[in-house]
Image (cartoon, rainbow, N blue to C red; front, side, top):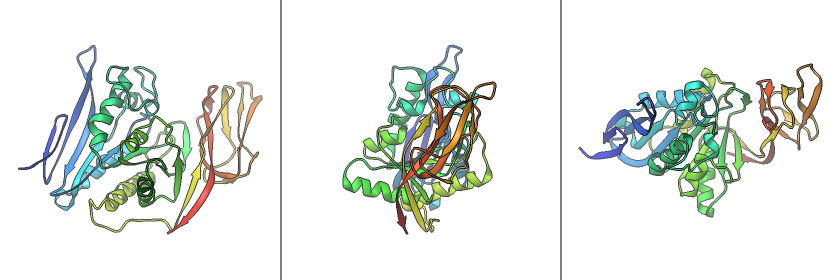
Length: 325
């Protein structure tokens, strides 16, 4: 039988599916850190799509959606290869934290990693080089984690050639969320690294507050299916919004520590200078008021009260454009 793909402990022929792992590093107790792999090779040739979750250890909708998608996919109805990595940052996932407990690093800020670096850097390096670089399409699933409420949004990049940008925009729209976040390409994240190497890559933020709500899980599954339909890997009609709102911006940081309390709900419109949250000390005295830097849409707000200086508070998206279907 034709060998469709070989990666880690997984060897899959056309029309097969398998699960396995990519061993990465050995620990002092003899155990190993490895990436879980869920692979489906279609009966017909086609593109390779990598879908990942759990780059941050407190984000759960992505991992579960990848597991479900792998079980649902029928190799006889698939063109190309589905390569799912439910959890990239296994050490962080084990403790339910954004950063790794091993080295304290935020993996989504250190790509492409280093083969001789800290554990997080090694995981990032091998994930990019041994998994993502096999892809024609890459979908990185994230969420608000333990600390944030977050509106569902797709992050895309306007970097590279004009043709590549057009294909990136088309992929972002095809994902089926009505909010698109125009990225700068300056982040050291996995989807940025993929795009730098000519791989069509988007990041979807779906989920919040360290939960795995069914409605968000359904949305993550819809995004995966939509992208696969767009890539002509499966048949079907994509579920698309009537319009797409394009935003730009970034998170605002705290200048003091204490207790953060949001004043507005996500997806509400806010005005420049409007108070959207405040920080008190442990006696209840207000130390800092967080104000909207411009008119826009409240995309995310911290809901975990405990906050340290320099941590994220909220993100207001400046509306750049509205695209009709």
